[in-house]
Image (cartoon, rainbow, N blue to C red; front, side):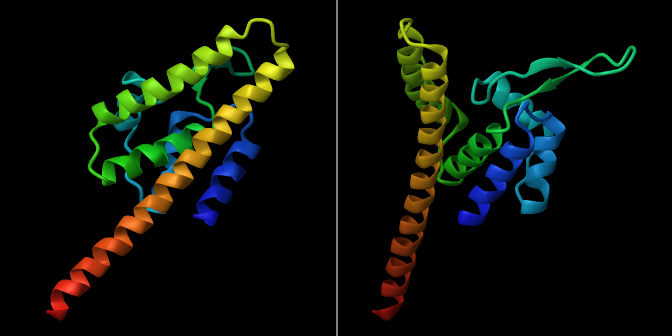
Length: 157
């Protein structure tokens, strides 16, 4: 888990302006996590991931490309973990929607705060998302250990 957190941190640090969908898919491939471009787009459509923002390419007639926050990789990892636990995309979407909407709304309603404080609160919210992910991983390990013990206990009878 620490190695995974380091990999997320490295991706976020090296891509502060965002990453493309292809970069995110490529991030997961060597880690054995199947993530197709179509699946990625579905997560965005369902609101599980933020929409991209268009960024112009330097050079004549280069156009623009969509960039997602590098933190999207953490959220995808969480989505995959929750699905492994048996949650449906709809259940995940509702739980994310409820939690993040409430927190985002609370920050947005604080109109009297300075932009630096708002950024700090947003960073804290992202940190909370990360800690929630860590908690879920810890619970997955606990469930695995309990299940393994139950299966072992059944064989002892």
